[in-house]
Every structure is written in structure tokens, then in C-alpha cells.
Length: 286
Length: 343
Image (cartoon, rainbow over all chains, first blue to last red; front, side, top):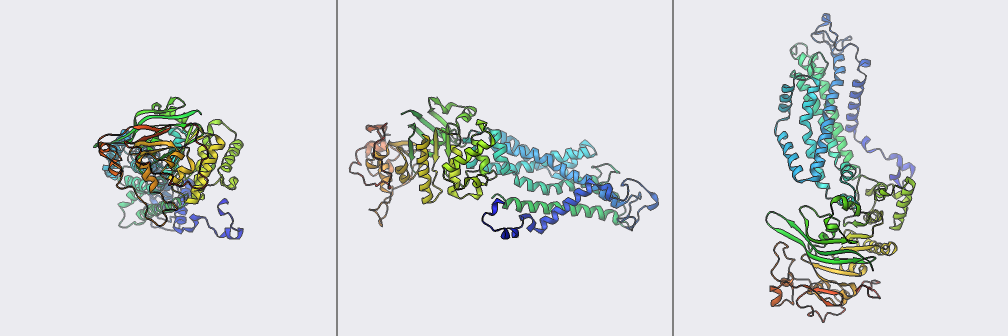
């Protein structure tokens, strides 16, 4: 490594990569990797078909055959929760990627060009932000109707504002920085200045926010399914499993505990990942 | 000698809802090939805005409200961004005050240097050689390893050198230097100034140097314009300016310089503060602070007049400072033997 000029090889070994030093970040990464594995290969882990019903084992408590018990229709909760990871992770990630790109773009353009464009885009952002997030999602879902695609559309429509605001504020700080002026002095086009010189400098806070926004999107997705607005049954999704188990909560606690636990743990995982990224991006290159 | 840049009656204004600040108010000067031209004055006198308007870098809401900026006969002030992009970097380049923030923190030095001569479609190896050559030229030790590093691995002086190397990448004919050494300590300041002077000679560039440091002016410049309240108040060659200043403001600036003789004594400051550029006084803008001001100074604006061959001053009484003779010593080695030929 060029960074350690003049340090003897012996000393070099003691220098740990920055991200390994933070245990919470490692835990976050581990949880997220576990989620990715579960969602990529659920068929290898789940012992049963997540939607196959078997009325002979209705509402069974956790046992050696059914680790997390069964639900009213006799479906294996463990298998459903494992298969549900795929949908919930998809909601979290896809629900963030599009707003990240669109919002980041809007923030970049509004901040850099300023003037009428900035006022227009930021007023639209303000109007969108004036509505409570969840209520807005529910309203859009109510208009579009139930379904995964519609849930994505709702999340995309309401999620981009924070990214626009975040990126714009960073752009405002940096657009008069001398290295940006130097880039203009060098005769570079606006597109080049925006994407090559400005973007890498302003994107880090949006990246950090995205990690915690994944949690937000997953929770919103699960809430919508819980309310019966998200994915349609019998698709295994944590919010939907929770909702189905709600009726039997007084005697079949396993039907609500396990999907809830998975939701909570994955939320913590992404939050820790986000915290770690904050430290990492802050210490690096500054 | 060839006239490279000619600024004619330049006006720059910063309009706001309540008032308009005339930051640059009718500035004219010429820059010849191979010379260093100094713009000196205190903070807010319009020297930086004059420089910025040359490359179309005025910050919002500032804009050029009048005059011409002729670069080899073409008026830059009228050019749109696209036309300006052809001149920026390739013909006229600029280095900035803050070396700490003048380099992009997320790009390697090599990436930032290659960008400067990207238009020439060089091979990767040729680009690297050219960049190494430039880093050597500006005196960066072991450029082979330095080239692949990030700006945060450079010290302030090194960053300014790298900045200069990047600015020189496309072989500009004119280099604008906006207080290039203000943020550096004095020894590094001297090194950078010597470097600029040497590069100017080797590459045949012209430099416009903006500074508030008269010592730097004496060391570097062939000709100088002293600015006050958005106007040029005195313009002549450096030797004449230091030996026989005509404007009381220049005289005051010289008087407030520390010298060997004044060691231990309180420095003489110019009384008062610069005028509000949105509400200039009726008469000479400097009159309220001028110890030689008389009645006419408070009533009428003086014009920029030729008080001696090649020596312009904007003063009603350009002769009152006559007894001021050679009080200022040039820093070592800065004394120029011959008069610049265009004077």
C-alpha cells in the first residue's frame, strides 16, 4: 500500500482496515449478508413450500418439524419467513434505488443551476414533504390498488425528496468551491463538472441516508401488507404473515413473533450498516 | 511586444433589491506577452472581480455591465459559455488563493492532471510522461509516486504547486493568479513566487497577479495597477510606482509597509475604511481618507490622467506627494535594472 510509506512491513500488519475496527458495522454487514443469502437461496434453507397448505397441522406450536410453528392453513412459518426475506429485501432495496437516482439528480441540478429551476424543484419537494409519509403511501396505494408493483410506484413517488434535499444542500456548499471553479477555468462542460467533479463529493451523505432508508421502505412495505394494501396473499411477506397471524395472537404467538423478529433484526442490520458507512465515509478522503 | 489582453472600460455590478454595488467601475489596462501585470489594492477594491470577469467566473448576481475584454482582439465579455470553454484552460488559465480547496478531494492528482490535456488525445503513456514533466517543472519531488496520490496526501505548498502544474497543463498563454500565496507561509510564498517567475520566463507566458502584498508586487511585476473602490487610481511600471508614487493612496500604502528604518515604530496606517461601493461619495472616493484632500477633491471626481510618460494617476493633486522619494526598499534581488520597454 502506498499509504504507508516508510513504515516497516512489521508495523504494517498492525494497521487494520478501518471498517473492521467497528464491531457494530461488522454486525450490520453480517446481518445484511445473511439477508441477501436467504433471499437468493430460500429453496436451500426453507424445509417446506411456503404456500403449500396442510390443514392437519393448523396452528401448530414450534417443534422439531416446524421450527417456527405453522399458521392457520398449516403452512410452515419458518419457510414463509425465509421466502419472505426475498420480497422484503426487494421492497427495501428497489424502493430506495429509484428515489436515490431521481432525487439525487434533482438535487444536483437544482443546487448547481439555482434560479428558477431550483425554486421550482424545491417547491415541488416542499409540497411533497408536507404530507405525512405513511398517509401519502396509503393514499397512493388506495388509488392504484393492491399489488407489489403499485407498492413500488407509491414508494418511488414519495421517497425521492430527502435525497433531493440532501444532495442539493451539499451542492450548494461545494459549487463555489475552488476546485469546481478550477474545473470551470479548465474549460470543462457542465455535464463533466456535475458528474465527474461534483457528484463524487456530494453523494456520500445520500449513500448513508439510503442505508437507513432501506429500513424505512421495508417497514412501510410491511405496514402496507399488514394493512392489506401491499402484496396479495398468499405471497410470503413479513407484514402479510404478521397480519394473518394477528387473529390468533392470543394463543398462537409464533405466527406474529417470528416475522416481527426478522423485520426488527433486518432493520437493525441496515441501521448499523448506515452508521458504519457514516464513519467510514467521513474518515476517508477528508 | 504583442498585446495579449486588453480590458477596456470594464464595469461589473452586483445588483440586489435595495442597491447596486459597482464592484468594478471603468477599469482599463493592457497585458503584453511575457509580462507580469500586478493588480493591487485592499480587500473589496474590485481586483479579484476584475480578474474573475476575464474568465466569466463572476458569482451570482454579479455581471459585466459594460466595457470590453479583448483577448487577441476577440471580446470575451460577449462570449457565451460554449465559446468561453474554448478559451478557458487552453488560452487563459487561473490559479486560486486556497490550495487546500483548489483540488478535487476525491480524484487522484494524475486524474486531475490528465484532464487538463485531454483534448490532445494522447496515449496513456504520453499523458503520464507529460504529467510527470509538469510535476518536475513545478518542483514536486519524486513525481512518480506523487502522481498517483490524492490531494489530502499533499501539503499546502505541494498542493499549490500541483495546482499550478494543472493550470499549466494545456500550455496557456495567460495565467491569472488570484492571491496565489496568501494562504501559504512566507518561505513557501517566496518559493511559489520564484516558481511563477521562472515558469513565466521559460514558457513565455503572461501573468496577471492579484495581491494585496506590495512586497510580492515589487518582487514579481513589470507593471502595476493600484485599485481603489472599483477604479484604477494609479498605473505605471513597478520601479516608477515604488520610487515616485503619484496617488496619495499608493503613497499611503507604501507608508504602511514595515521597513528596516521603521523597526520598532508604530506603522502608519491609512485612516478610515474603504467606502461603500453602493453609495460612493460625490467627489474622489478616496478624499475622505486622504490627508492631502482639498475642496475640489470632495466635489469632483478626478479622471485618470497621464501625469508622466507611461504613468497614469487618478488624482486632482498628483504632485503633492513629490517629497516622497525612494523610501521603499525593494526586497533583495527584486530590483529591476532596465525599464520595461513598453513604458
